[in-house]
View 1: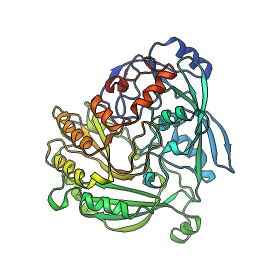
View 2: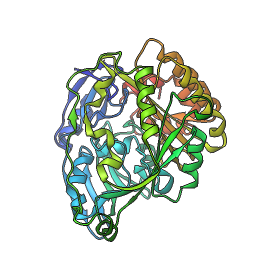
View 3: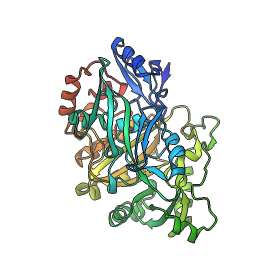
View 4: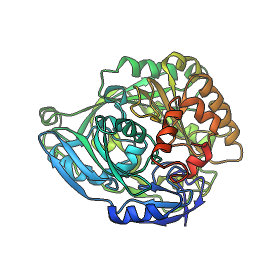
Length: 440
């Protein structure tokens, strides 16, 4: 069948099988020449598309054990983050790290080593994985942790499913008193002002900025910075008496029923939206629900249809702090003058990555959405050069078009990762369209 990532570009044909047990999974892997595991298909590009066969892991959806004292939860790899939150938030527990959508699987979160709005404070999702079970192409299953098969553990965190199939994981949850967040909104007059604000507020548990990519001059990259903290029960009762402790929110938002016409997102419509959003924003301190703060895009189901049938590219890079103040304005200048505007841009600071191919490094990351067009690829090639020259790299879970040389320049542990793959018999067996394209 034809598969794509969330960006709906590129599209590839792949044979899809859906194993329902470790025994069935082992049998399939021993007899399939080339394959890769896929979660809920929320990586943006071609990471979850097998070069031969795609193993759909969503039937591995059981929660197997929870220790309330240690807050350690053991789940199968196909468990959805949304189901985990639905089950454990009413009991006062929340994942230590979440990405921008809750419709992802735990196995996918580990494979991509997803980072949230708190990476500067607590690291990535992989930093909160206690242990995992990994199945090799031979069907053999091994347990990996920081103390057991530690090199393989580091290769699997952020390894995009290329070291084996994640079958099960034990992850750390955190204790929360309510399902509310205290959100402080602060205006930043430029992209560099936003970076300064994020850096100055590294004591905040969560921090993220929305960026206007079409502003120019002194307002280049003007932003809204959102700082967040979990709300205590006492604070909730003081500020919003009578509010439910754990608010129930819609599982799915209002659906986008059809592919939007290509002209909907253009420079004029995006410029008007950005001006309205920035102009109406005021510095404020408010309480918002957990869904509103962590997963705002989930409020619009199938929002990827807004980019039309051709789909879109999400382009996310990270730059070290030493070069970010120089390179970020160059990148924003390129984007502000192009005919290919970015509708959504998100800025964060990151700490160090935990895996051999983990995306984060101590620095600044910017994620951008671009509708697929005939001219967008030349723009992104220019941005690639700026990122590489600045000592940065691109996020594999978002990538759909980078070249092998860009990848190799950004990931210094690649040779170690390749050695790990050879050692377990994964080379030539575990392959996605992403790994073929960037020559892992």
